[in-house]
Image (cartoon, rainbow, N blue to C red):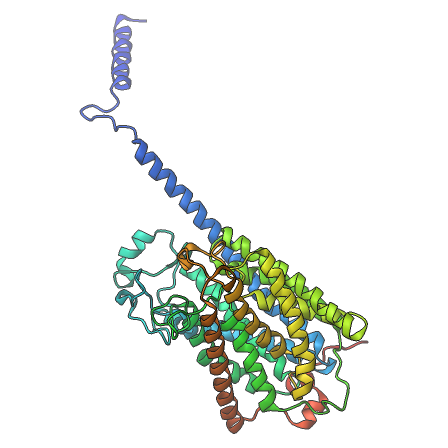
Length: 496
């Protein structure tokens, strides 16, 4: 090798060494992050991971609540009617899944949750104002409902008028909308049990639309969006408001009392009281009840809106109440009739679930057992002795289970609710239920009474208007033929 080549290689090696020793000339090396910076970055990752978990749980809960309507409620009710009407009641459930989803997306969610209160409980002008009576247009046509994980950025983003409202606590607003929309679907579906086998399908569609928008949405706003029945709301009618964790008033009292009015206004089924009308397929009913039991975990535990200890407590309370309700109803049959029935056990577990709904996030396990057992006994008498005494034809006992069970649950929440499991942001560290020296019972009674009144009057008016405009019942001939054929041109069972 020539001396020139050796010299060239030596120079190159020297330059390379200098570059490695001084990677950036004329610029200081960035200092390592401080301990505070590392901690902040770690906290951000932890919060993001937690929010992802909360969102996953809430999406699962949304699916579970939808599962309650179909196949759960569709099979539960479908088995209780006569075989000539099985498709009719299932069609009602499926139709409401589609119809109420569209209504919720267009206007329902905004009517129920439009507007916001600030940290002091006063109307927030940034949310377009607030009314304690009904939601505003904030979420009309899904406006302002979008997903984001970056709350600070969302608050200063100019794309939605300078501020976004995409988060509801720790979950995206979009997820909250979906979860609450499933409640909007199942609540009017519960009423189907009262007018089963005799209401015109076209009338059912219009009735459910009007009932959902004019009765459900305002009640939802009153209880769950700071309105006139909300706990500790400045707008509460009695100055206290009511605790309703998952829908004792909003869902069960409203649908149950409305079901009673439907049964009274429509009148009895042809042949009721003179012809036997037994359930045609109790296998469907039992399977449907089991599906409702499973779906109710999303209904109640999901109402925590987080995957936390309160959700776990609500999950346990829900399970215990269902178990106690099933045993209590079957036990009452054993005592009064000499043997328990499968239908009784299925009805009892649903009664227990209904009763625990408003209390599930506020009571411990043992009161949940008591509430479930009480519901099994009380609803048993409501569906037998009470119904027989007054002679109304609540076809599938929607009033006896949901109206009575929901009222019992709302009142007993005022007895057993405890700050031991209730979110401190709700309880404020103060005693709640009667058993721990609290004073919320009167607020629970007021909320139940207001819900009864609004549901009864509103349902009566809607039915009377529809009766005058389009009629409520199918003809006697169509009723005798069955709604499967007369309303849908199909049969549930075709054996070849």
